[in-house]
Image: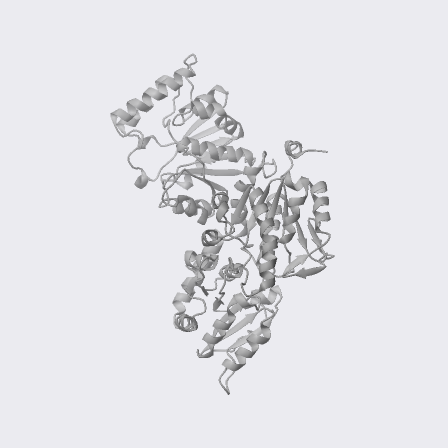
Length: 627
């Protein structure tokens, strides 16, 4: 039987088996996310499959396996055939990695199968199991559940939390917090069933009112009672609640009792809606409300659906939940204390009287969704976590185009402009090496859609570039472009590097005009020492093809290199072609050199580099690089 290493050597893509709870058309945030995640991973070339509960359907794709449920025990589905199907998939599919989505009692079967125990797994922590202290059955069930939950956490290679507040507040995750990564959930950038522009579906709201919408299961933690009471004394608004659940009779009675005699109710329960109707409601509403009152609402994926449509949001300021974090960090709306009827009423009135604020919040939410919360961004952030557990590329070894590598330390101020310019120019595959920044550089880069790598030890500029080059090799990119994060390099000049792509293995973007007298002195010495005729010997703006990437990522390049000169010597020794092309730089960002800033630093730099060059001393020869 072929091993994982062997099938990777054969050029096959990584195999990821997701173990989830349910899958659409079953409703729920976990279900929607899992469907979008598997679809996007398969689109990117990863062989992703899913094993979930549910009755198999005739239209299920071959990569989806549903296992019928015989009963539910305290909200937990019991599928007697789950272990057998998991065992068969482990044998037939031979996954390289298991991606377990919790809470999910079916994931416990991984603890009982030897092949599962020999396969690394990642835990996606969607929420804690919230236990109502007044429900004895739930408390007893969690006492039985908890040891298995801890066993999964103990063996997990990595744990993914969905927001910083939830990670900090989670008691089950507290002992494993150091091995946790925060990756927000994401959704497809387009709706599952795109709405027709000429839809004739009439609006369900009365004319002349502020159109409010809420979507969710009618259950205790959604807090719909607060919203209904707040609407009772608020004229000129109407709320539609889409969803069904055990509290529907109770909420219907509350609506009836809260409606003054002789008036139409300001709240209506629509029941369960299909996907097309839900998207139409989101497109038509003017304010989306989510009054959840318990941390069972761990993230609030429906908020992303509203933001995707550009709808402003009014949500509970729920401590320890990702809900207010999404809205505040995105500028997508307002946060109101849970259970506070008066505060909710005041917030609704404020939104009613502030159409310009609503429009601004909606636009900010739509922009934040596109930059931070699409499923493509989520997948990009998952790749380094997968890669750490595997000994070969996650993606297939077919060419994947160009990777932009940006080493950064404390560059939170300049990175957003650079990343936006790259995206606008069509460069979406960007990795930022966050080299122990203290100003939130990594978080800023992630917010703007970049993959972020955080090394365990400081790397320096060349070490960061080399880490990105290694990632480019692992992901089988055709070429890598390295550039600084400080705003000096103009994105438009990437074209100058690409124009020489077929002529050389390494293309260097030169801007010798930035050279101070001290820098020019050092460069003159390097040229005499090495025989290079390069005009800008320390430029970090370079294009490496795969041959040059192999040399630059070698252990010798790590040991020999000092401020990039060693890599140039190794690339030349390998017989590869080097071309230097003139480029412009952002002169406003060209500041004092961190290296060539005094006679002492220049002499020290020249001395160390001379020793490194002499360690690799070869007969001196002149090499002409075309300007």
